[in-house]
Image 1 (cartoon, rainbow, N blue to C red):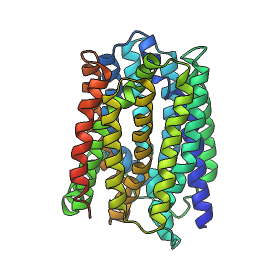
Image 2: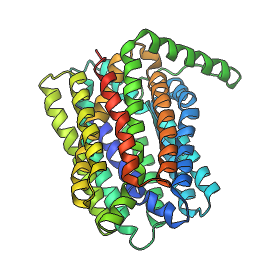
Image 3: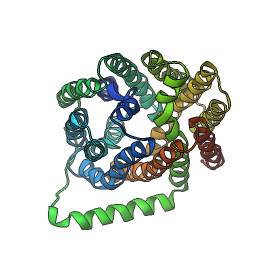
Image 4: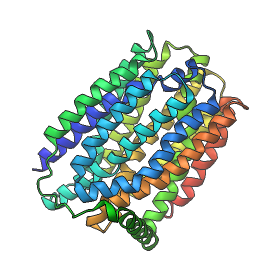
Length: 392
């Protein structure tokens, strides 16, 4: 059962990320081509993060009430509809609408799959550590991300709208595959009525806040994740136009593969240390330190190839951090019944901070040079190191 669980989790991540990543390498270039400014791009993406903030808790309740599998499957189909709307859109308003649709689908998925994995491991008495399972899944999922983003960038040579349509097709396929491979027969559904939705949501928010207040580790992790997310948003938005300017568009498909390969290498390296029983806190701190200096040095040099080296170093550390964050959070949630809700609540707070950072990094990029914005961003990551040291 343990092998079946890991195989299903890994297969899901591979197929979903293959489809979802088709647009990632060309996302900002697509919006710039449609006449959007960096500030408008900041607002557009903030719509996604604000949507995630608003949808996280109610969709977490859906997962805990009706099942993690239905929440995940519905989420994939909603995202596929959002990518279709994106590809067909040409105006600022419709880009914002598309982001909100994708946000709804992402919120339905957020925390659900990880909660399913953790619950299934506990039910079946698995001896594997949570971080080991998540790290393995991230490695497989990262391969899908590399393939999808690279293919999407090559397709973008012909038309920057095409990657969105390719993403839609693959995501719909991923939805049907997910129905087949995820087994949740032992999930106990709760009784639920729409009349009590508001009260139920309020109760879950209060419960999540109470859990976070009583468990200092979760609170510190939220602060660390929020600061780190705030620090990387400018790089997420501006890397493709920067390197297109410094080196050329021809690099973008290969660079996407290099970026994701660096993240995959980070996952592999941290997985080896995890198997040697190095504490997750230690690995989290080291990953943030590497990220902070990677961003700082990316901002200080002018040669495109030198910037690329430090940018990839930063991405290496991000690859290491993401599965560690998931595992650390799940290991510190003690309420099994509300596991997905608490995870969604944590994600909601982190994404709210990221949304603000994305908006302001866009505004700053219309005023300052991109690398100057990156220099400001590194400050948040250095502050995150201080709070990471407070983790237990």
